[in-house]
Image (cartoon, rainbow, N blue to C red; front, side, top):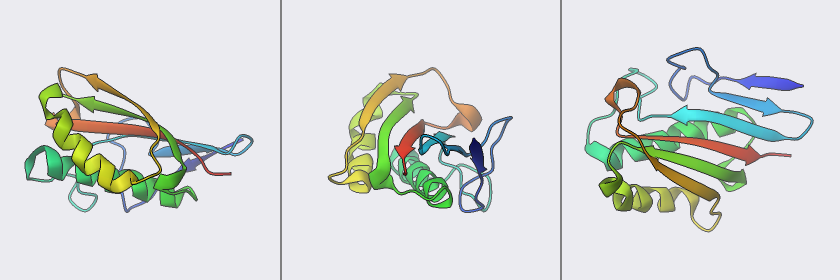
Length: 128
């Protein structure tokens, strides 16, 4: 059994997908990739890669909360970057959010992201 997760504290999906899905039997919470959209305006936040990364992680945090989880329950993330040279800056912001609860992670260079975003992060959490 699954439950679709939706919160107004993170941007609405910009396509045919959910913000998150909680698989009750296994207590996995799968989070769709988030980009740096302001949930109030639906627009990318200004300020470059650091500002977008911070907004991305706040959006993920909001979906986690709505699904009954938190960042310390995230076990896997995937980061998508349009410029791998920006990876050190993303790492600085990312480290502030995860602290000592560091999930496994992959980082992938891509040629573009929705709405011209510079970074996208998806996550998997175990909330049970």
